[in-house]
Image: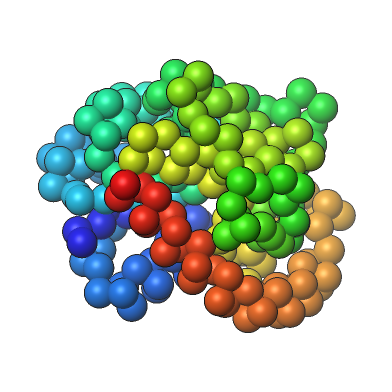
Length: 218
């Protein structure tokens, strides 16, 4: 399958998901959020939209409303689309939902479980790194939620997860170093959690990746 990976930040690569997709024999093309265009969307059999330190509400950044419009068209055409974190948020917004900062100022950083899941494949713990919350479009199916936040949802031939199954230990440490004020994350504790959980979750991670692709492909 020809899969377009939309890397919305160099700090948020496809990580373990990209490695898994390549190992399954899929042909991956990577583009930046800024370079994404209609021709690339049309050529792709599936699109994976990755994370970003920006929010969907940062509409003053030109590529964000442009990407939202491109995704709205793709969703209306019911072509396979997967979103992770910011990717899930912008899919929700493109379909008529929204994403905004959590009013109570919460920000999740590290490994977390998931309180309620519609499918066991979504059960955590998974890496999570977000301070925004998704408001689902009316037609979306809620698949997972935790602590009052949407953690997974589906639309026709599209699926989004708020957590970060693609995040490797190195990616998480990079986020802790680059995007976190001193004292908010214990980097040593995060590294210890990742050293324990990342290898332990290998089978669950592969099952989730396969499920995401199958759910999007319909």
